[in-house]
Image (cartoon, rainbow, N blue to C red; front, side, top):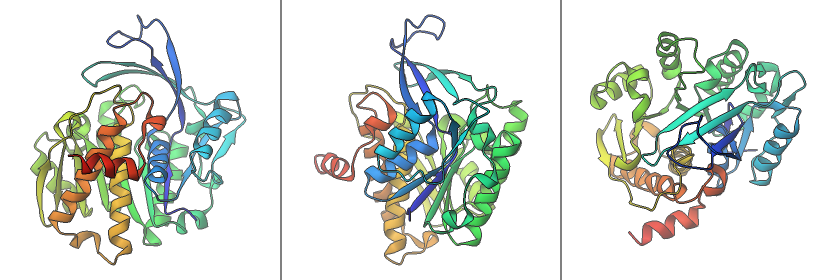
Length: 323
């Protein structure tokens, strides 16, 4: 059974073929598989661990394309399902050279919004070592119920629980609702990874030390802030620090944060398998893990497309050996 199970959205990204233009002015779009939890699952497999994905796509050409891509990448999709009522969700993305993105979603509803607790097996969740999810599946009632159920099963089974709150303003009914709901699951998690752009929405402050301390006080053992070209910041019971980035020629930044998260999960599981307690992992080991994760994130930026760009463990280790 998979070491890591991720749950959430698997969608089609249509990425502008020209950089630094608005969605309105984009001359065309290239089709690519998308969805952060699915990207993380593929990243885990590329880094040498087994992974499974729980989610729902449409019983349509795009849904079957996505299933083929993820399965071909080595991810178990035995608990992924198809909706005959809703179509696979689409995201149109205009990318900019500074790493920012304009997003517009076709999702009314998307198949991922129809995921429910009956669409997957509790025993499947229990069989894993780690469970990872994001916040997109917390927006709508049915996937929220499914997510909270899976988190509860994972918690009762002693899995390492990882959470990446991913704020997409156009998907939430309001910013106030996002600010209330996104932090509401933090107390059930062991690891929380927050991007710098979303940090204030999730924590209510732009002060990393204070915000991360508040997250740790809720229950997690480790909180990480991904900062793109500035590296990452972390805080645990043993202290905090900032890990510098690696400089690379950037082709595209889509999926870099998901590759980073996959790398953290794989490395933490290596430590847990060796007998370590997450709360007791020393700072020097955490910083080594995050240096590896920064390398994976950087390598993901060197190619176009999230899933095709995710590196293998050998590629990441070779990259690090040259630094």
